[in-house]
Image (cartoon, rainbow, N blue to C red; front, side, top):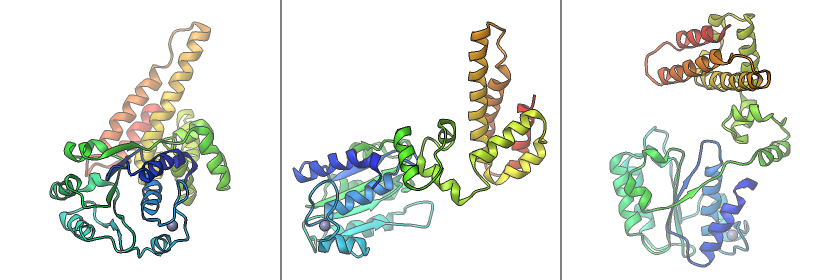
Length: 302
Ligand SMILES: [Zn+2]
């Protein structure tokens, strides 16, 4: 379990112990906050037969079956598809309408519930309204804005926090990874988990992009060459361009105030705006990513 999520797990576990835990728990957080680990730890804790604190004991029959992924009272809705359909939800609900086989509790886990179709949401709604005894629904999402209001209102909403910079730093040190600067971590939405992932795909990382960005600005790198190089990571490249333009803009403004010169940051503010527009274009299907990037990169060259 990630350390920055322990206070949240402790609070939920305490309430479970006092029988004050809501049967529908919606874990909401930004991508990379670790909500999935929290959901699994909570499911395990609910099914543990001999818990002592916030965490499951790891030794009882319930924990051993959970670890072996064969607990009879645990049902995770999984799908390879982009959407979660009504059949998958009905199957999971069918299983928890029966009495618990091992302990008293049953858990259904559904991750990224914004992927549910409307009929799937309605099927889930019924269970949220009339849960059977000892049933807990643990739901996660990175995009609560896409959920039906009725789903949100029938759950207890838990905001999953992103770690502080110090927490991220100590997590990455424990993983044996180099500690990023604040700017580098910001390039990964302040998530040490997303930052750590870059080590699996070494060519596509913020450091490499930052170097190319500087070369573009200096004119040492051609906009078309850079676009060709970054087209497979176009969304990252556009987000990082926005971040770096904003950083240069802030620096310019600071220097302007210190030297009481005329403002020279307009170029970077334009770059930031162009990056925002490019980001929107990338979300439209069928547009040529290399051309979008080349146009943006040409813009930031002085
Ligand atoms: Zn246990």
